[in-house]
Image 1: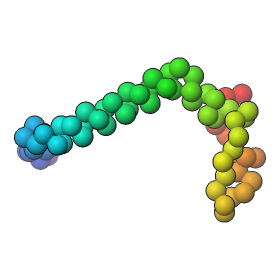
Image 2: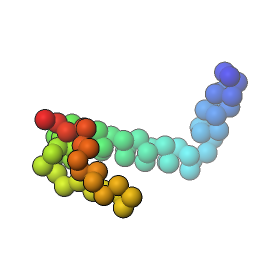
Image 3: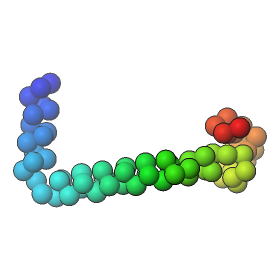
Image 4: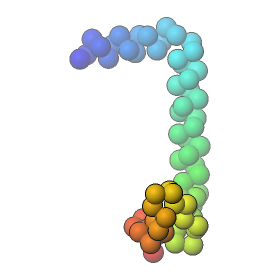
Length: 69
């Protein structure tokens, strides 16, 4: 297990494209964290927000169990 992890780390260190991809992925996670910490997630899951339901579950708005209230 340790050898496989070491090989993966070495492969990432040796490939510039993987390092850029990792940095962009990290940036995306950081921006998401900032958005959520500024109150964005409460608005998305609140009962005031419009429910976007899948076609096979048209009444999903009734089952909003993640509401903030």
